[in-house]
Image (tube, rainbow, N blue to C red):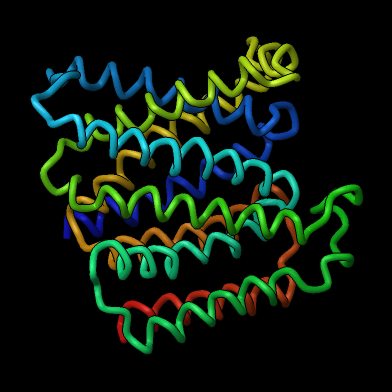
Amino acid sequence: MLGSFFALTSAFLWACAVILFKKSGDVFSPISLNIYKSFVALILVSLTMVILNIPFVPDKPISDWLLLALSGFIGITLADLFFFMALNRLGAGLIAIVECLYLPSVIFFSFILLNENLSAGAVIGGLLVLTAVLVGSMKRKKVPDEIPETKSPLSGIIIGCLSVIFLAGGIVIIKDLLERTDVFWATLVRVAAACVSLFILILFHPRRKQYFKELKFSKAWLTAFPASVIGNYLALLCWVAGMKYTTASRAAILNQMSSIFIFILAALFLKEKITTNKTIAILLALTGACLTIFS
C-alpha cells in the first residue's frame, strides 16, 4: 500500500510539474532547463539528508555507486533532455499520450532484466498503448495553436518515445538495488551524476554562452523553480520510493496516471483543446495499461 501511495502521488506531482515546465520552455532551452532543475533537486535532496541525518557516503560497494550513476545519466540526463525537447514540440496534451509508453517500457525492461513474466495480456496492452500514441498524433494540423508550424509533430513523438524508454530503463536497472538502499541517498547519487554529465555537456557545447545566460536569474524562475521543486524533488522522491516499496509493474501503472492528470491540467491551465483524438487515445492508453497489469 505504501508503494502504491508513493507511485500515485508521484504521478500527480509530475503532471503539475509538466504544466509549469511547458511554460518554462518558452524561455529555457531543453539543456538549460534540465541542468537547472537537476541542480535544484540536488540542493534540496542534500539539505533533506542533512536534516534527517542521512549519511552522504554510506558503506556501499563501488558497483552500487556506479549503477546509480548510470541510472542517473540514462534516466535524468538523457530522458529529461529528450522530454523537454518533445514537450516544446508537442505540447503538454500530446506529451501525456506519448508518456503512456512508460508502462510497456517498464514491463519490457522488467522482463529482460528482472526475469518478470511477460503475459499475452501485457503484449496486447503494449500494442494498445502504441496505437494510442498514433491516434493521438493524427490530424494535428487542426490544432496549430499547440504546435509551432516550424516544428514537426513526428520528430517530437520520436524524441518523446526515446525519453520514455530511457526513463523506464534508467529506473528498472536499479530496482533490485533500491530494495536495499535508502531512497534519499539513491536519489542523490542519480541527480549528482546527471548534474555532472550535464555540466560537462554545456562546457563543451558550442552554444554554451547562451545556455549559461539562460541560467541567470530571470522571471522564468517563477515557473521553473516551483516546477523543479515539484517535479524533480517531490515527484522524483515519490517515484523512486514507489519503485522501492512495490513491484515495478504495479508502480508503473500508477505512475501512468500522470498522463490523465496532464491531459486534464493542460486543458484547464494551458487551454489545450480537448479533441476527439486525444480522448480516444487516452481511453486506449488506459485500457492497454490496465490490461497489461491485470492480465
